[in-house]
Amino acid sequence: MTQKPAIRCAIYTRKSSDEGLDQAFNSLDAQYEACAAYVASQRHEGWKLIAERFDDGGISGGTLERPGLQRLLAEIDAGRIGMVVVYKIDRLTRSLADFGRLVERLDAKNCSFVSVTQAFNTATSMGRLTLNVLLSFAQFEREVTAERIRDKIAASKKKGLWMGGSLPLGYDRHPDPQRRELVIHPGEAETVKQLFQLYAELGNLRLLEIRARELGLLPKSKEVLLATSGPDITSGAKPDTSPFSRGQLHYLLMNPVYTGRIRHKDQTYPGQHPAIIDADLWQQVQTKLMSASARPRGRSPTPTEARVLAGKLRDETGDVLTPTHTQRHGRRFAYYVSHRLIAGGKDPTGWRLPAEALEATVRQLVAAHLRAAAERHGLLVTPDVTQATQIAARAQGLAEKLEADPPLLADLIAKLDLGQGFVRISLAQDPISAALEVSADHLAPDLLCFEQPFSLRRRGIETRMVAGERLPAPDPVLIRALAEARLWVRTLREGTSLAEIAKAAGRSEPYVRNRIPLAFLAPSLQAVILEGRQPPDLSLARLIRDGIPMDWAEQARSFGIT
Image (cartoon, rainbow, N blue to C red; front, side):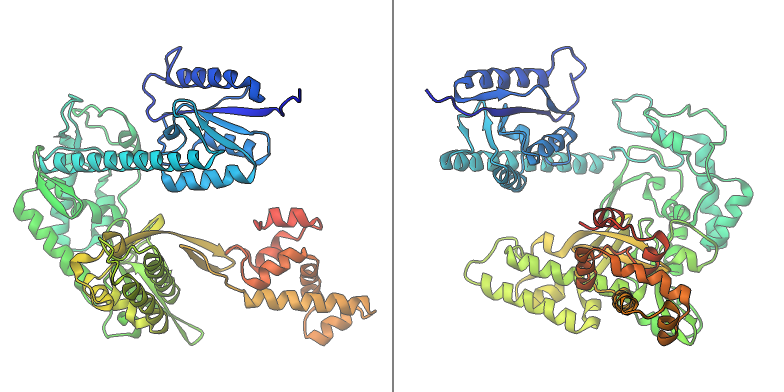
């Protein structure tokens, strides 16, 4: 009798919460034992359990970024696993989209998947169908749970309860952990009152920042913000922290919690905590803040004041990014700058972004978003089968029109919020509905507001933006230097001296000598550069500064190219 080939089996276990994980025998152990017993029952099929465990305790199934799962996938990619065994399918993932990607990855390595409490496995077509149905319900359950949590938070805030987050200066958590309320910290409350009164007198954040530093007024220390329990509210000691930045002051002055209210998104509700600032002082400060943000910058209109994103761009502190410009070598360079930087002084949290590059990036993101929504029929709350093709074509046309007519961006953008690592774009409802020829009420919420990754990378003396899906961007300076290096190497091989090459090129010998190593880049690396698929921070200056390894594999590792 022919012996069946051995199938190496790995057991994966997961638990969403960390409750009970410190017990001698916990949920993960129970899952593992059930799976191990199932593998033992399949010994006649050649199943063999490996010793290594892949456990994820206290991690949600809504993400694939789990240490145990990532180790398991690495073993699968290496071809060392033939069967993944789980207690239930939702232990592996609750997302139908994530499961599709996992199955493709397993199939590529001839690895199957089996659930011991559900009679199917992915080795059969019927098993895949059953699995997709069950996963749809698992995903539905996760989304309903998330909705219930969001609804609970919204309902709690409507009742004026404090639902967590960073403690505002002037308040501590209630000593009773069962009561979701704030109590006044006497010493910090005096600081808050002083700041509001000073701004009401000065009407200028820069002057307020200077005055607060002179008076020794400080924000809540990081130690207090990170503490699991509130500090002694009777303590009058000064926290060990840095002075207020202008962004912190702006956020503090606009926080309605000081009037005894709780904020939830764009709404505020009466809170169950006492107010620190009275209504008259609050209104006086808000009026001055609004007047300051609407105040014209400069003495006369300039081209940069008509930028398409003017008045629509804010940073994570709520500060407006104002169009401005500078003059260098007879050329005008436009920027969007956090207003607190324009008003004077320095703030490391402030933004300074090249205007044209930012506008081009936002245009690209909006156009790509419209096309993606059209392709997945995500334009409407309820897709209209009879008009889906026409509406999708209009969205595609709007994306093309936006790319051909940059000023159109001003009409389509309602608001832009910048944060560390992301940009949130809110589209104007009326222009979008008019372009798609549908009622504004029928537009999908995900169409009108979306987020994309956003980061800045230094590239020599240039700052480059990286947002959303990066398109090929050939670097003419790098490509020209690569072409020159290849020409110079060929000339050297023909017997021409370095001095003669430098003279013919109108360059110095050190200049030519520093750039010749570019010709020895790996062919695949040169192809990436020619196609414009190199990392944003890979520049000619970096290649010359860091040096080019002779080993091609080491070149790819050094310069972050796969």
